[in-house]
Amino acid sequence: MKQETYAMFKSADISTIVNTIEEELSTRNESPFWKDKVVPFSHAILSVLIPLRDNNLLFTPEGKQANVLTPELFLDWSDLLSLKMLAFTIQKSNSENKLLRTYLNEEACGRYKKIDLTLLGEYLSRYSINLEDENLDFPISNYNLHQGVSNVIKSLL
Image (cartoon, rainbow, N blue to C red; front, side, top):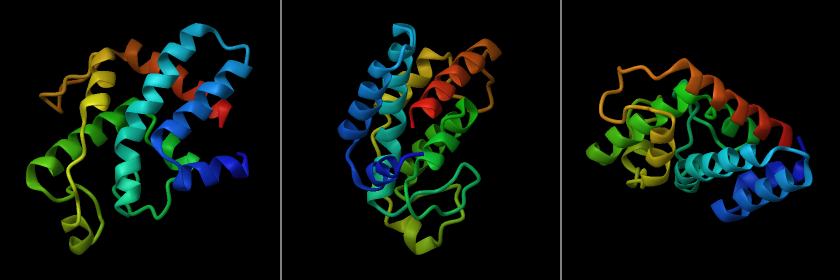
């Protein structure tokens, strides 16, 4: 991956990152179908990861602390199952006013500030993710389509 990409994920705002991904997508011969999927996905996931980054509360899908938002961490969260788990983790954390379901220390978790889940919720709803019951599964076809989105993003970064 390009050094500029690492610098961008480390400190840029959501709009800058999404616009860069959108511009990169425009320079490729990708179908407009993918643009309609990649841009909303990027915006949705970054709407959660950027606030976590800015509060030094980033964590991996396994719950381990991550010190920096990198393209690799972004891609780790791009799996639909991980994204669903992230949404429920943030939803529960918003209710308790502290970061839950991670291995971050208690002091760090106490610094947690509520994160707006609107964009992530809308995105997950498009893929038939039940946002009321974490234990309900989703159609495998939606998972496969989302993997295509992840693969396109991986090729852009």
